[in-house]
Amino acid sequence: MSDKEAERLRGLLQARCGDKNLKVIELTKSGHAPLDRRINVAQMLKDSPIMKKPKRRNYVDDFQYPSLDVLEQGSRNIEPIAALVSPVFCSWDASTGARRFGLDGVPDPKEVGRPVILVGNHQLFALDLGPLVREFLIEKGFSPRGLAHPINFPDVLTGLIATKVKMEESGILDAMGLPFELRAAARAVQQASQSSNSKSSSGPQGPFGLSPPTEETDAAQSELGIGENFGVGGAFSKWGAVPVSPRNFFRLLQRKEAILLFPGGAREACHGPTEKYQLFWPSQTDFVRLAARFNAIVVPFGSIGSADNVRIVEGKEVSEQDRKGFADMMEGQGMSVVSESLREPPRFNPSPPRLPPATQTAAGFGDRFYYSFGEPVDLADLDSKDKVGCQQMYNKLKGDVEAEIRWLLEARVRDPNRDFLKRQIKERVMNLNPVPKEVKAGPLKGNFIRSCGRRADTFPLE
Image (cartoon, rainbow, N blue to C red; front, side, top):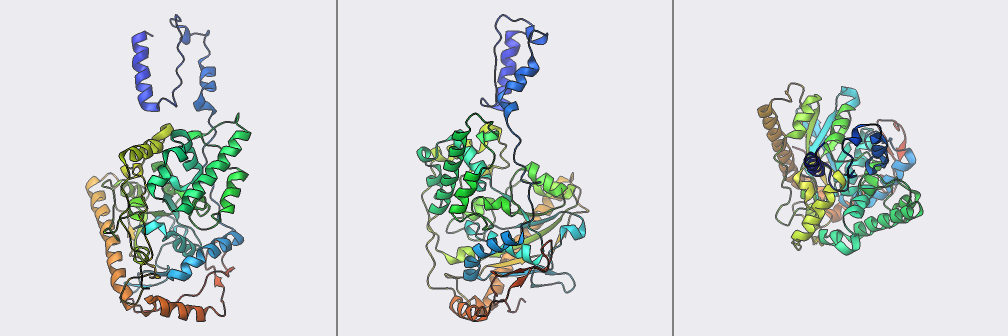
């Protein structure tokens, strides 16, 4: 091999693998020695940093349905939010061609023998997740597997930050405008991870410089109260969520799971003061094409309420330096970014409570959360190789989600229980004698959740 050819190959490998993943050993005056028995190429590969990396955590296959105690704890932690916003759930009734209360209109992937994808808009600060996941676990007996931003997983976030930036020095989390609790959670997990790593610094490091979950990181999360709350911190994976990536999406479809997908992602969850309930979907139709390949059923849904509880104030713009630092962090150590949106750091604008409290016809603090799951769309007849057909289906699904949002905005003015003060009085009276809520399906069918309060949710849907 000539020196010129070696330099050419080195450039190609650096571009593909990155400097940190590429280990170059120069053999001077060796001629063709690497090709004969004098050089053990296999041992060189074995000793390289890449081969020493442990197996990545398998978020798709490692998920286990929560026990009754874990579900009860998660329900207890989400109940203060649910008691404030009194979530209402509706779904499509195929027999009547109209909506009805409850989730009976959402197909169960085990019953249909195919993957079911719930596609919708993401509410402000992702506060829609907790009530939604709890309702599915209790009413449907399964947890829709969310495709979540990688920064929602403390082990991934810790590794990304550790390999690209120093958290306190870079100010990345501060630049994002994260609430104090989330910044504290991330830093506590990072400190626990660093403490654990220092005790076993000779141990193997995973991709992005990660180590396996430790008792210290679990303890840090538990101390902050983020262990069983359907979302914040490490709880995402406890309820079935996985870091968003084409590979994870493919495997969930392959397993015929229920999948929760917000194409607008963090961009919608961190929207500005003039962007309430707007969709920020990417232009690519990849999720439709892949879903069609597995004959998936897609359920478009809309949800509203979170942004009506606050007054969003325009925050400071993220600097180009911090934006570039975040993008580099997301792409560090060979991590494949799924879309351009993942390179943009989430920005949490200041959002004080909206006063006065909500009434039947006006938004305000304590406004209800409303969810509507529309008519399921069967992709069995859609050819995944038909780019035009997939684009049309993508546009249809986006339009269906927008239609569900519009219907909710119109329907909620018919709900007398939207009035926060009246609803609070009514529900407090209803819950003077608590009635446990029965789990209607799944492994825990027939058991009761005691921390799920009763809601006043009867009003004309049409």
